Amino acid sequence: MAGSVIVITSGKGGVGKTTTSANIGTALAHMGNKVVLIDTDIGLRNLDLLLGLENRIVYTIVDVVEERCKLKQALVKDKKNPNLCLLAAAQTRDKSAIDAEQLKNICEQLKKDYDYVLVDCPAGIEQGFQNAVAGANEAIVVTTPEMSAIRDADRIIGLLESKEGVEKYRLLVNRVRPKLIKSNDMMGVDDVVEILSCDLIGVIPEDTNIITSTNKGEPVVNDEKSLAGQAYLNVARRIMGEDVPLLDIDEPTTFIDKIRKFFAKKVQG
Amino acid sequence: MYDNEYFVVDMSSCSSTGEIINSLSLALETLNHSGKKIVLKLNDGNLNQSQMLSIQSLITSYGCLLDTIETINPETASVAENMNILVQKPIEKRVEDKSFIQSDNSGFEKFAMNPTGENNDIIALKDVNGLHFEADLDAIKKQQDEINISADLKNAGINPKEDFNKIEQQVISQYKKPEEVINTIDEFSGINNLKTDLTNKTSVALEEIEDYTNVEKNSIGVYKKAYDENEIDSDDWEEIDFYETPTTDPVISDSKNTTYINQTLRSGQILESDGNVVIIGDCHPGSEIRAIGDITVWGVLSGIAHAGYKGNKNAKVRALKMNAVQLRIANCYSRRPDGTNIPYIIRSSIFTPEEARVVDNEIMLFKINQN
Image (tube, rainbow over all chains, first blue to last red; front, side):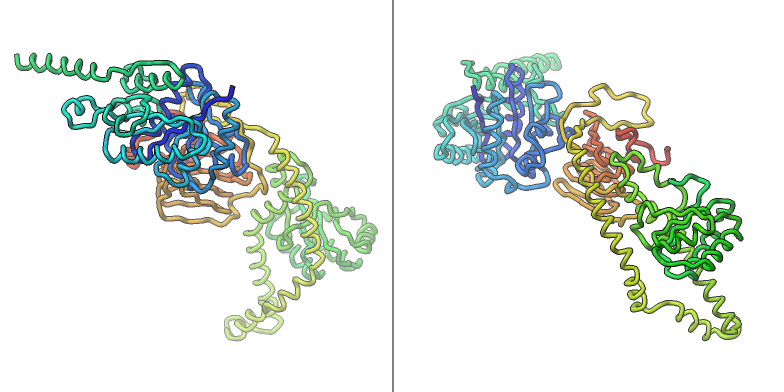
């Protein structure tokens, strides 16, 4: 059975495409799938950094396209999980170094050997986006509960609908802060889904662990205590077809509040 | 080919007997190789018996013995054989005609490990001559000029202290005009033919090398500090399949040009040089330096550095602070140990100058001044 090619895109920059790719990829590999991550952000690559594989890259996707090496040579194995591979982008070139047809070919080849091919898309809707979407048959649209990100996501969904080959697309709402939603300072997840009228694949809460994990080069799903990590694991399960209820991201906040109150009382007393 | 008791003198660039005697006397005097057996390399010029005798007597007067003559001229060969001197056909042909002295075998050892055998010696010879004897050659030529001038002055009956103008004219006349130089070069068209011959041969040899390296696979290991007692944990050698970079010329970096750059190299920038590279500034992660020769960074090296990327394993990488994502020398690749990325803030405060070299096909870091 051929694997599926999933593109992770957003339109707007900084909403967490790369973090999502790294975490979902790692989570899927943890569950025993063979996963390959493709970084298509040529010239501004970051995925290798999040996975901590920066120092292992010898060949990049541009080398594969320009036939300086074979595809298998360019795949960098993960430090911990042998099921996970990375096809890195070149840092010293730009988006025009590859075209859509070439990336499609690479996806077709990888599909045969891997269960999931995750394509990390660059921001924008130009050449880089066109390349990344070319080989995909599924898409995850990442957005945050902000008007600008939602507008860009809407544009992306429009482009995906007009693309042949992308069979389904689902929405991932990232960096959600339940406290702000409660106080009506942030748009709720339901509102976002309603505006975009799109299936939801997951909700990821804002988590400071993401920052430290990025600096360490270790995806947050490896950290069992992290709430965002748990949320990403759930997303991975949903990708595999399991029916997992949405994580209750409210509870721990209130729990922390309880502790705060407890300490506050103590100090007062 | 010859061992240490032999002293090989290459006279194939000399056109006349006078020139041979002049250069030979200088060579014997300057390099002080008395008591050795002399191997004389000649071009295809014809030498008669009296000329050969005068050469032999000159060599004997310096306490040496004329043992072998290498020539392709049959008449010179027969004259030499009559005088009980060994005659050999030249085995290796000259690439550089400017250097006329080729001494002991130190050059051969370096390239003995080359896999393709004979043809590499030709390249080695070229490099060795170009490298070690350029300085000597200049000194010798200078001396030669001085001696010639003083002899000519004597002949002309000039006392240097009396007439400076005449001396000046005499000196100027010693240097040939450009046209004359070109004419003399034309006389050596035979040597030029040899040159083209050689380049053809070399290219064949290089193709062989490329085929050889394309089959060879490699893996990427961690670069280690030679002076560090704590061993790095054992995910050292890791199997990333990649083919070695195709090696072409084994180049010695000392004889190459140096690119000098006074700015910070940023992510995504590549610096490629067909010589050595000196950078005054940092090299940020994501940048890449490739040089045929050495790489020296007066700052923090955090990008990828590839020294001797056309197959020179003697190339070195030096930096005030070594934090390179990957170090590559010739076809040896190594990566930074995991988790040693130095945070941005403390980077510039403490410097530990280090030099990366290849030891047993592994890249090792040495403190500068440490052997």
